[in-house]
Amino acid sequence: MTKTIYYGAASLDGYLAGPDDDLDWLLTYQGSFDDSSAEPGPMGENGSYVRFYESVRALVMGSATYEWILDHLDTAGGGGEWPYRGKPCWVLSSRELRLPEGDDVDVRVADAPVRELYPEMAAAAGDGTLWIVGGGGLASQFADEGLLDEVQLTVVPIVLGTGKPVFERPLPGGPMQLIGARTFDNGMVELRYAP
Ligand SMILES: NC(=O)c1ccc[n+]([C@@H]2O[C@H](COP(=O)([O-])OP(=O)(O)OC[C@H]3O[C@@H](n4cnc5c(N)ncnc54)[C@H](OP(=O)(O)O)[C@@H]3O)[C@@H](O)[C@H]2O)c1
Image (cartoon, rainbow, N blue to C red; front, side, top):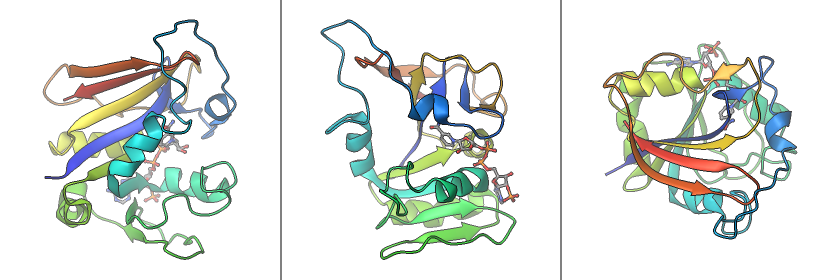
């Protein structure tokens, strides 16, 4: 069965990005944490992101996230190319969007409620993970439909004060259950919750 996971990084005060979609606070972050039991940073070789990404068989994101990636291909993790080659990626938008170039790019722009698109996404993800990349409005749409299995959030000890929130509205069903926590030697903390 497909596992639908909202995976991302947030500031300490719960923002995915600054108000102008600024992600410099995350991309330039270099903290430290003096604890020998902490793991290396999430992005390193065999780090938590690498292990997570291996399980991903399909992705879904909102258009603001998608356009940020297209505008920042050099820093978005694909070495100048679309970073999710070989994996189908649904981009939700009511607009016509430009598409990335390159081999093995599978971007599917769709304008529909997530409950209508979910069967197709789950079929593509199979027994693997469907990654909800963001933003918060999209995550809230999945949560509202009861289609969110897990939230995996890496908290970065930076306070932005304002920006794009992790969720847009309260989750139905009340508090989430903690299913895992991990500290990294750069001071980030990864939290895993099940709704
Ligand atoms: N820190 C992290 O880990 C992380 C993770 C993800 C994103 N981010 C950043 O956080 C920011 C997120 O931005 P955001 O919250 O504004 O939004 P977003 O979810 O990326 O995009 C929202 C837009 O997607 C379209 N959309 C959403 N649901 C739709 C549906 N069901 N059908 C059709 N269209 C739909 C709408 O735009 P249109 O119809 O006008 O196209 C909507 O305004 C970005 O800057 C991104 O780079 C950070």
